[in-house]
Image (tube, rainbow, N blue to C red; front, side):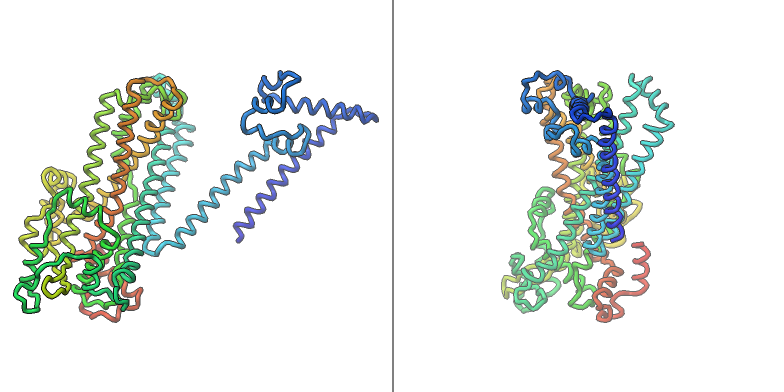
Amino acid sequence: MIRRRGYRFIAAAAAVCCSFEAATKLTAVCAFAPPSSSSSAAAAFLSSRKDALSSPPWLPTSMKTMKPGTSIGQSMSMLPSTLMAMEEPANSILYTVLHTPTLWSVLAMTSIVALLVVWEETIHNIRQNTPKAIVPVIDSMLAEVGGLGFIGLFLSTVVTGGPLGKIIAILSEDYLGDEELLLEAFEFLHTFFFEVGILFFVVVGVTVGAVLEEVNKLEEISELALDADGDGEVTLDELAEALNVTSMIVDTDGDGILSDEEKIEALKSATSSNNFIDTIIQEKSMTEVERAGECLVARERILGQFPLPQAFEIEAYFEKIFGENLEETVELSPVTWLPLIPLIALENSVDLSRDVVSASSSNAFESCGYFFATPWVFYPTIFFQGISLTWALFNYWKMASIKKMLLPTLVTDGVNGEAALLPPRYTIDEIRKDFNSSPSIFAWGEQFFTGGGAKTSPPRNTHEELFGAVGTKFEHVYRDSIRFSSWLCVALIVYSTTQIVFRDMEALYLHANVGNPEGLVPELIMWIIFTASAVFQLSLAPTTFLNFCFVTSVEEYVRRDIVMEVLQEEDLEDCIVSSAIDPATLEMETQEAG
């Protein structure tokens, strides 16, 4: 309330200042009128002042030399579009106020303050309407935005407009032939980095939205779609019916009891292939009900592992898991920027070699067509695009394939029609040994980037055997992998669109003279394809992240500390057996998570 009153006070004070200056100008006009008792003389003087004001120095020459018969419409067409609406007499109050410099200064500052108010209120509302587990993610994003702002302040005060400016100008003059070129390049690259950072946080915001939607849909679907009899509890039979699970003969001996051997044989027959393309297509085509069903099946498994109450809410558990991982994902270290340097440096060199700074330069069209026609720029760009696409698809496939191994399999017995929950596939030695999440060259890459991977950090249990060549470093390495992959996609989208696609489209639309006309259209087509590829890769990121959270929070990776937090928030901690969660184990896991 106090803040809003302060804003109103500033606005009122600004209005008073503008009115005072306008009144002063009008008074000055009358004060210089020649003393005369003749009203016609005073009118003649004011008329002369009106003529002088009607042709100020900034008025176009064509307006000052108009013929007497020129119509108002014709004269207005000679003015800039922003002035065409002004038809007030030169000595009117409105005319004087609109030509008061103080007014425009106040409007500019007021607009800045208004933007700050909108920003502050938006952040306040987001924090108020965001679940508690996700609030730290918002705080981390704001901290990173502040860091980007500091970089801009440093460059403007120390580099481009400060003591280092002269040194950079000398270097630019000696090696690039223009003392302003390197300074402008600094400003452009900072703006580019800021745009990349902001778009990355937008992508994170979309991921947060997907996370919240997943949690909300899980709760909604489990209550409305899956609970057929409305008793508030989703049974295996209801879950099997809602998910249209496979029907097979599980009780092979027909004794009405499903033995472990019968479950294992059924699981072997139900195991699908781990084909790269098939896994991606299956994961991409999953419905919301099926994803909710996966979480509920995982809940049944957790309830079987620990004697938890039936009222345990799996959506609250996953919400905390999502929030914790997202908070670490949005933290941008200086190393995050390193993958951008080779690609951006190569493509920006096309502009700098032609004395062009960026697509906003006045001579920007001189570079059009040369991004395609320069082999040492075009072919590395294709290489980076291929690496980025392969990287994103592999992350997506690996998380989905490991999730399939960790999920219990829900089937319907073809004999008695009862639903049966088969154990996860990874618990069967034969199936686990045939599974490989690090095929061919990917195993070498994982070992290279993790300093040995499973050779130096071997798996400690059968769950970690699913992680492949990366070993026990899986959680840390693949959280960073998802972040860097998304970061690279964002950078590719920002640069390709703002610096190449939009520039080429503008050149075609304006029929402008370009540096390489023959390469203009092929260049536009190729970079549109590159942009579409990066957008597709980003569309995989939310699901990849959700599956990553899933595979690092079930089975051997169940977070007992978070389970206890959920139970405490629901006042259910007294409903579990005291031995269900060992205090020493809980303390150790809490320290590891911290």
